[in-house]
Length: 265
Image (cartoon, rainbow, N blue to C red; front, side, top):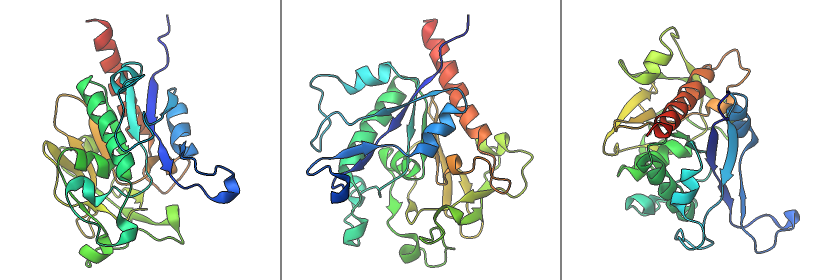
């Protein structure tokens, strides 16, 4: 009998003040970006957006709980979007437009910790990688260009997903194993923040060789948690960028393995 498809939860992007022309006056919108859902679906998984469980800053446990949501899913993908708030790691924003979204930070960290507590894998993309670092007690550079002036450009508003740079995988890392035959991997670069102090029980899996900026992190715990600073879902179909298939397949295989282990208990 064929097993059911994996059910992968996608954290929601939040739009607290929608443009008037959308017609949602005084409403908060929660949404996902199409590419990341299709990336999972193309590999046989069901992509399900997870809404926040309260309209306030704190996640409410009245009604349905975070634990109940996680119990029904097989893995979590933290998608990109707004900055992680410096207040989430004990800092003040250096500029007002770097204040980030603390409501989303709390919502995503709640789910992140519960997925790991239930032994289910987590994959963080761009903001998701930064959130993973902060959730484990790490900090971020609020703006690479300001705080790391020697760094290459990691974001270009005009090029958006057309800005690429090389990454170097750390020897012995999972990414180095997955891409053992790749000599000069190129990835998208659409971020102005990045890992500063690494969180507890995390290791660096990849850096930008041009400036040392952290590009991938991994949890050393008993489960699976990987954070990628680039957008692998934007690489689909590219003949230039790093093939994203090994990453999503590795994540989904971890979800399948953990689901099967749970079924035999």
